[in-house]
Amino acid sequence: MRDGFAQVDKRFEAGQQDMRELQRRMDRFMLWSFATTVAVGGVVVSLIRF
Picture 1: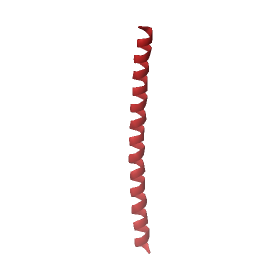
Picture 2: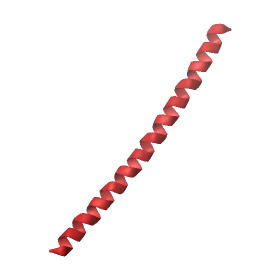
Picture 3: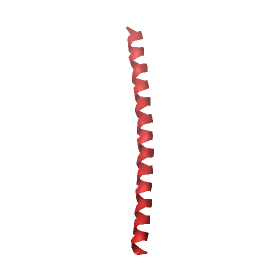
Picture 4: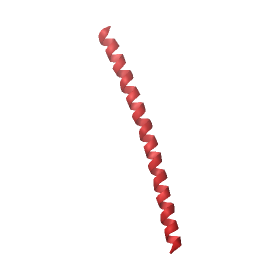
């Protein structure tokens, strides 16, 4: 019976690790996306002023 719990615990830990990796990738994508939007906005504003 304990082996079953150990297997479930290992699978749960693996799932948590996958979720942490996904969260890290999403955070990185959001930061990249925001920086790109700000940069493009700056270029557009400077072109309009020019």
